[in-house]
Length: 177
Image (cartoon, rainbow, N blue to C red):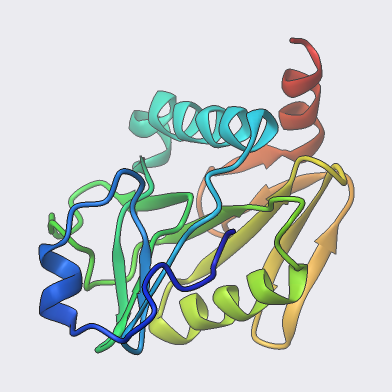
């Protein structure tokens, strides 16, 4: 059911913003889209990432928020699995300024192409870095202007920062349970 319209008819931005959802939905050009709520692997990897970034807040100068609304266009409200902001960033109820990093945790029922299009939207909005972590295939991707770049082993990094995330450590942590 992920990313399909939650309502049959288009609604306005104001209607969307006034609605209360059990699990936040995205809004694209009048359509309210259900998001994949994920399964255990999805949720656990999301938790690992939020914890990792927030535990390194002092060293890395960033903090992470799960499922924070981001207005990427006038009529696009996206909800990345994790956003990472620099300490001192503008504090907004809905982000209208690009965070440093958006992370999507891939779900098995979402085509990678759909995630790739979302990553491209994040980059076009001005988010400097986009990562996609697939806990099912045990791979990660970096969002690039030309598409997703596969990262099988090694680190996801943000240049000119101390931020280093070992992809295999994330999957090993998932496997320890």
